[in-house]
Image (tube, rainbow, N blue to C red; front, side):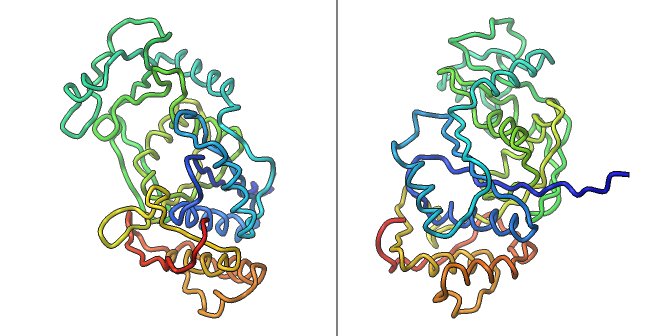
Length: 307
């Protein structure tokens, strides 16, 4: 009998739409520590499938920042913009299963035809159109439920038809949509565990559904709270919330551990990077993380510089 334990593989997958911000940093820290505490691998994927949103140079800046903070990733960095053939392959797999149809609905028409919850009602589902441009391509969902056993948020049960609706997998402008790209990449890279922000929790049942249709294994998921200002806005790159000089790196990482409820000792904020990561890996406990979708955090913005 084969008793070989499968290798833990986690990942961090930022979009190159600006510099690293605190919300992304806590996702990086939590996914990294979960992987390293399990003696696993931690991969980086740049999610640049949508080139219209990319800010030139931001991918390199994100990688440089992670390196300066002491993150050590395994294997080469994957760029979604270089994975088009992979996405095409799995798109055709879904087409062969009869799950894909063309949608010509404009934004104004979608606003008029969508349900009160914003769910697409399948307006184009029964229209026999060619699966070529200038149409978007949607994946048809069933009324089945998807069960999620989230390591942080707990057990969830989602009815796809009622909560998601038929979703776009290839856009009208011929860019592949996030859902298919992520599922294909996670499978291709052998990702076993995904730790990310709770703002992506609504995408999880969609991705599990795609994994089931493509006969992929489903990774273990854990969704950390999203960092919020006291006035209700996300701590994000759009608000330029996080600043950093090189000598402030460990202090900023220390704040990330505080947000993640890991109770780091105060003097850890003034340690070396190697001492910080050694303590963080040895003392990491995902079960301590608060079961919240959003969490107000008073980030110390007196650090200066740009992360």
